[in-house]
Length: 166
Image (cartoon, rainbow, N blue to C red):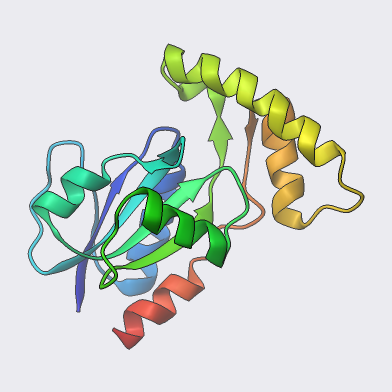
């Protein structure tokens, strides 16, 4: 049984997703900022930067992680979750979920802000070449062009369903 949602948030998206999970699962959501104590299994929600899930190594070391929710600008898919598992060496016994989060370039530290200014141009250029965009791709394009934006949705039902089954 999942006892806590632990999160590491930079721009607020991971916090919002953790709070949504907390409300649906009736368990606390706590920031990992000060290495929060948690008994039992946890869901870790962390933001993605260059394919890495920020704070994940510390979470795996200090908690009994049952699931990881990687939050990024891009569309979430089974492929993105598989990539996150491989890139972050997440053991097979831990479930991995991807969620599109919001973005606010102004809340990033300067080095990441500079990287994302360049990356956003690349993202926008690639998406503008596509004939048709999904809702998540439209949200991503908006974030890339404007430097801020919300995801296509904040739906956590697939994670809640998994938690209920596990």
